[in-house]
Image (cartoon, rainbow, N blue to C red; front, side):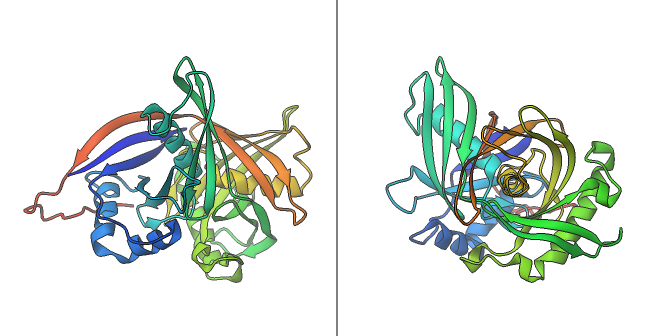
Length: 331
């Protein structure tokens, strides 16, 4: 049997596997990610949990693994219906809440507790705020984000569009919805997913998909299609849909993608000291993001805040006589 604790962060599912996974070899999280990708036995667990009838085409989750060293509480391998991602902001928020609520990390009933975790893109820290022993909100400090490219022309069925490319633990392409003749609203959902999928794969075969520091982090992870509502007294206000993997759509406004958006906005001069990005999702939930420091290179350290709630505890198995095996995906 495989057991999980399920969460949602701003509407995006996150399935935390708590037992039943074969040992994943490696000395670092990145090495364990490669091992999971190449092991039919380990990947069968991902498939079982993410595919129908136990999951669905937009399911997301993780395996817990040892950290790279004693500086972190645990390591994480993030996965979706098509494989393993390098970062996951909404998952980091959910894991911070889960670690405190379950007592995996001891926390004072009032105040902020740090939950440090190693993910494929590096070390991240979730700061979990509690009042009277109840988790209220979680913010996480991400790996540095930075701009990779501007005004990159991409051919699409809607005509050529120009996108910006930035990194926030994974590589993201950003494009205004208006450039596609769309708005980030549920009524345009199918068209947004189709356009985001097309742009991602068009860029993934180019040099813009290359991570300069580590080839294991290469690949365009997602397209962020956004509406820009201008600047409020608090800072920029935007709404986005993030289309990742192969046509999977984030229900939240995407935590790691918000970091990537912050890098672009900071480079545009739209994030002065104290400014906050209000980042809405297509379903109306919100993350907030801010830049906490800027390096000489222009890379920015970011902090993203949101909420996560437990939705269930599950036990999954596979009947040997079940001819559907680990399941199927309908997209």
